[in-house]
Image 1 (cartoon, rainbow, N blue to C red):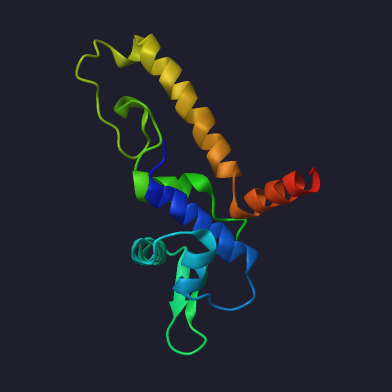
Image 2: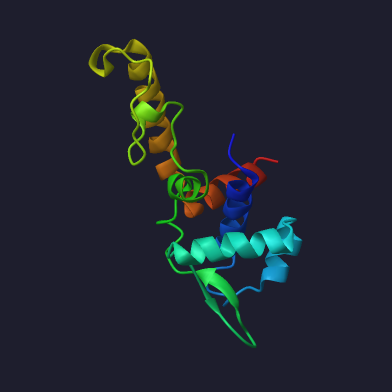
Length: 145
């Protein structure tokens, strides 16, 4: 399961993507509309800002806004930022590789092969899930009601 921090980050990013072009949005509005504790949200938004996904403006008319296009921000990047590697085993991760202690031979390990395939498909789907794609899916689901 993804962490609450990651879930809140995704919710905040989708909220900002829906309001793109309307100027910076204050933390209190995001927190209220998305039901995210304000202090927790502050920490999340700062992490997203440090990662270059968001920017902020201080003072009157200030708040947070997307620094990247909603088509460029995907779930894989957000999940890695907050939760680390997207894999069930350390031997199949891209940036966080570690050899499994009990492994006799990675080249012929059937377990590793299965989990490598799972990770590959998962990352592929998460990379395709941009903020724009999430909003399109939401709109499609709403139209089906």
